[in-house]
Image 1 (tube, rainbow, N blue to C red):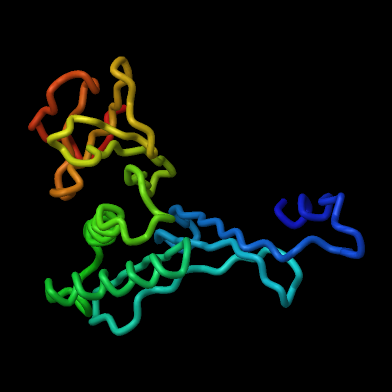
Image 2 (cartoon, rainbow, N blue to C red):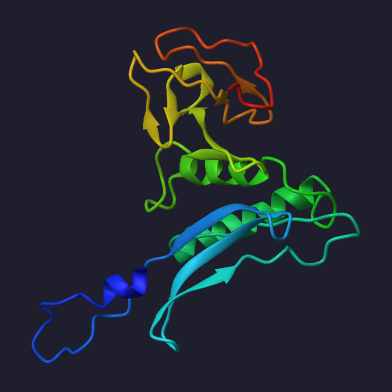
Length: 199
C-alpha cells in the first residue's frame, strides 16, 4: 500500500524524476498466531529495493535460558540512543540485563526521557496499548504528568470531564499497578483493576 501510494506522488521540482527517499518509520505490533508469540515489525524505506519493506524486531541477545526480551525503537536518533543506554542501565541496576523479561522498564525509561526535557522531539503523555493473545487490544490510560494531577490521558489525549475509560489507568511512577478511573473529574481511586479487561 505504501509503495503503491508513493507511485502517485506528482508535482515534483523541475528536473526531479522520482520523489525523495522518505525518512518515515512505522511500527506494527501484535500477536502472531503462526509463531505463537508477540512480534514487532518496523516498516521502513529501503533504498536498495526502492520501496518500503518490513524489518522484524529481534530478541535481545545474551539472555540466559528461559529469558526473553523483545523491544523496538522508533524516532530521532538522539532520544533513541539515550533510551537504549538508559534501559541497559536500569536493567543492570536491577540485575535483569541477562535474566528474566521486561516488565515496565521501557515505560519508565520513556517517562524519564520525556520529563527530563533534553529531547524536544519526544513529549506529551505516554501512550499505552495492551495487546492480548486473543486478538484484542485496549488503550490504557496514564495519569499525566503524574497521579497527583488527577489528569488521565488515553492515547496521548487528556480525557474531558465527561469521558470515561474502562480499561484502567497507570500511575507512571508506579506502573506495575493499574487503577480504576470512573471519570476525569473524580478523585483517583486506589482500587486496583483486574488484569483482564472487562467485557
